[in-house]
Image 1 (spheres, helix red, strand yellow):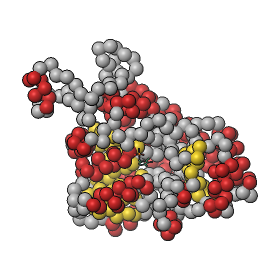
Image 2 (image 1 turned 60 degrees about the vertical axis):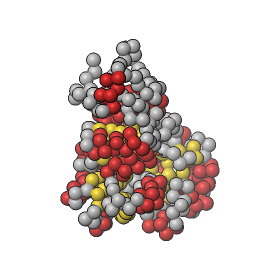
Image 3 (image 1 turned 60 degrees about the horizontal axis):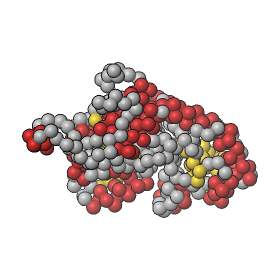
Image 4 (image 1 turned 180 degrees about the horizontal axis):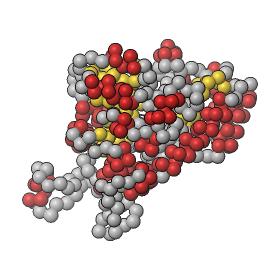
Length: 396
Ligand SMILES: *Cc1c(COP(=O)(O)O)cnc(C)c1O
């Protein structure tokens, strides 16, 4: 029998961890579509409600399929506790509700997911939590933004779409000197390429919607960390506020985790090759991907990550018109803002994902009108390249 407490490699954990077989001895993980659970007696019901004995009560708090997903992802990230949520945004909300209170201060990277910025600026602000935004890679800005009431530092690395890389170890030390926590949204790397807790971070956020699923089917998320902060505080938010993951989605994500390592390696291979080819194309001004020696944090990414990731961006000569021309010349790539799918996707960030920013704000983060972002999928690299070449050569 597989022992969940054994010392296993990532590939093994991804396939095996967390599974508990029912009395039916099923080989594949079972889905438990049940909202509640029955008790053997009134006394057992009372003891479970009182928390005196462990066991399921209601699927807003615990469900066996969701628990299998939580334990598998926790094993892969090296975390004590994992709480699965209905979406990646629900994970970030549950984290903030669980660990912050009115009067607290948060420091976040300026280049985080756009909806996370709105969550912090519009909704957390209403409840008396203020956020300062800093440049992801500028340690002095993080330092200068700290206040006595700073409780949380929040970042994504690499950033999307410009793939800037932050030094997790350095920012964890900075947070801890201040008595604050460091949360890393590990969506772009997944535990296969980067394990933030091992680098000193306290909390990991996932949008399972992206690479964990990997095939664009379900929306979900997770918060990972220690038994107290995540296992109790964040879990308490889930139990009371209810942004829980459905067992059907948990099952799909379990199947996604099983192939995560081979998929991530293949995404990286395709993206590395595409970055190199794009860099040599005369119509391309600049390519953003940590695999390239021209990337400002190439060395850091090599040390901190086990691969450069499947997301890359590039600036094309000719601004918006040329960028839209490349998009409209494709017949293979999907024109969608989603990422982490086996299907390659292409986006014009300035008019979609970052369209709500002002031109000045976009300029501040270095996101121009000629920028295109690719989430490089698992189709043939030659077919992806030819699909881009049609538009690139036309804009020449
Ligand atoms: C998509 C995404 C989220 C939000 O996740 P949802 O599952 O869409 O709610 C958060 N962070 C990053 C980096 C993302 O890409």
